[in-house]
Length: 377
Image (cartoon, rainbow, N blue to C red; front, side, top):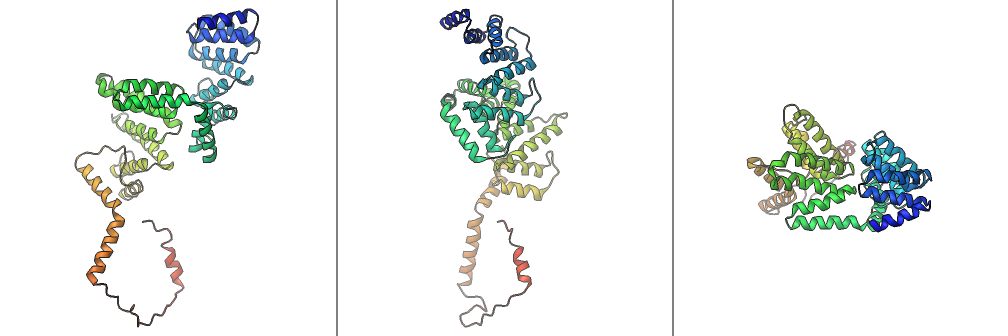
């Protein structure tokens, strides 16, 4: 770093705008905000995009200046107009969070789409996820696949963080795994955000029970961020955390938000979320009790959820219902086989070889057949 600062300072002394910008960025990364601002401002005055981007980061993090999201957005916009891809991407982040500008998922998508079209890996990843879920844009699986494949090919470092985190988790080293997932989460990777939330919710409270409440808050935040990027599992886990907040002043709002998260995940094809929504109809949790609706939803969810934590008789009951549901086809065929064996294979009257079979068609038969057009086993 010292050598880089020396050469950048030499270039800046000759009036090179890029030298000023790089010197400022090196100082900024070292935490020297006050020392970074002069070269960054000189670079910005010479229309260097990195100079403007550096000023944006300084105002965003409050390095050497008072933290000001509006000025950060203004500086990043100047850098974006000069073609700075990271600035364009970060404007999307500001739009998503509503920092320095009006919060707008649609506007975030527009910024990221521009950056993605110019091969910014993280922007390609975000656009791929948004296109896959139809978040802020029209759902388009073909476009989603295109951008996700390009993002994976261009940014292998993210996969490395996830793989290292997974290896540490499997070795029962949750704190080490959390470090790698947090690095991936800082870069905006949805799987890293989800996994960091999972460790905060499940593993860390067991290691440090006295910090359980703090870890729960961190888990909620990471699940929320992952859900915004399209993680269905994160939406369900966030809903489960909300369901645990049953204090009198929060119970109704918590159940309402949890059910909204389940409904949204169910609309995107999650059988687990569908089951949980049905279970809440069964129990009347934030929803009116409705056994018919509950049964239909739990049936559509496969009569179980990977996330359900049932206990005692209720666990036994739902295990039995699931077994019966999954064996329903076998049960039907077994019943038919038993009937055939019981009747000895005899033909029913009127269907023998010598019987006169006369087909009579009634006008109402078409209407009767229509009753079974939407039959769902």
